[in-house]
Length: 503
Image (tube, rainbow, N blue to C red):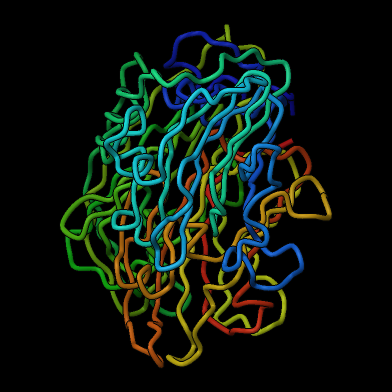
């Protein structure tokens, strides 16, 4: 198979831009049709206050809450040589509130901060240019203070705070062979704000005429080894599916949504590249919830949607299959796709869309739960994770740290500080009792909550998307502890969206 097998099909609906370099910052959001493209010039990183000694002092005492204290007495929480871009940063503090005074941004070796403000101003959603919904406080992100305004830097970026910040994490990318202009305080984010406010509608731009398939299908109950299925789409040509929408015309329960599977086959594949239950695929592993992210979503009274582009060169088949012996039902669906491919797009690499689903019911071993373990070339877009305690009193599973290993590295490139933090919330009881759904992250549903000696325990489902994608050239492993030191059994299930090179 040629190196360029997956190259052309997704690029039929966007203006010509360079495929050699990752679109950065606002450019990434303006070119979401380029999501399947895999770039050789980008590496993703995650900086956090995790306990370097292996314990659970992830910010409680501030031991690892800064890189160093500079000669002006400022706490340096981020420093990197560019070109690069910060896509997201998050904080929480004792009793949820932040008490670290001013934050300062120094660009390209400047001695005077290009921008500074207090922590309250930064996450108020009213301080330009960090307006809502780019910046959210603990009452919106349920215990966390998060900012998703892209901040590019050309040569160098240093971020400091007046005092110790406590818990924090920063997701960023560094680039090769890319020229960037450093961020300025007058950065205009209005188009990104509008994009975030319009979650639920098509976020991509493409001038090509879109074909629509709208039908109703009925799925009976599974019987014995028989698994009723219906073909939603079958094409024998090049193109790209732009969106999949499904509306159950009945009231599906949690079991049903975890046993009705979406399958996608590309270019005559024998095994599906996507084979996942529709509940987690659209953002919730705990049954219907109100999910309203940029890329996938769900409504308790209407349509489920996915806007992640799915390119194919020769053909595609999409199937809905029922594996439930208890229930079936009728569905209305709509699939939008574009036809053909551009012969002019003869450089770069566009990957196939894949989804990996995994479960451990329960995980009891003293080792990480694995969300995704893949050998090859590709890029991760996002993830959905669901946790259900095995017993009400078996709590603190949320203390487990996320770890992401890239290209065989022995040390995780991403090391988190706990489940709430990685999904941009904070403080387990506050987090579990206040579900939220935002463009890039959320915890849309919790259930079976119970107070266990003053601390709430229960089930949760959460999602997170990674702007710019987490690229890998050889391999990637995404895992998480279940409890501090993997000491808490729980039922885990997860789903990872990614693009891959089939070579």
